[in-house]
Length: 95
Image (cartoon, rainbow, N blue to C red):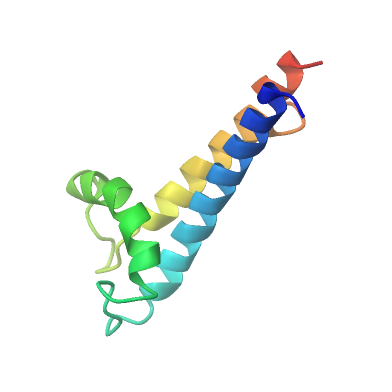
C-alpha cells in the first residue's frame, strides 16, 4: 500500500468517523439528562464540541433545538463525497 493510498484511506476514515460522532451527538440530544463530561459520552463530546461551539454562536436554536450537529453531518458528508466519492476530486485525480 502506497503512502497516497494510506492517506486516502485515513481521510475517508476520519470523515466517516466524524459523521458517525455527530450522528451519535444528535441522538444524545434526545436525552438531555445525559452528562457529557463522563465516560462513555465524553468520547463523543470531546471531538465534536470544538466544531459545535463556534457554529452555535452563528446559528441559533430552532424551536429550542440545537441544529448545529445536523449541519456538521451535512458538511462532513458533503466533504467526503466531494473528495472521495465516485466522481470525487481525489478519485478523479488518481485515474
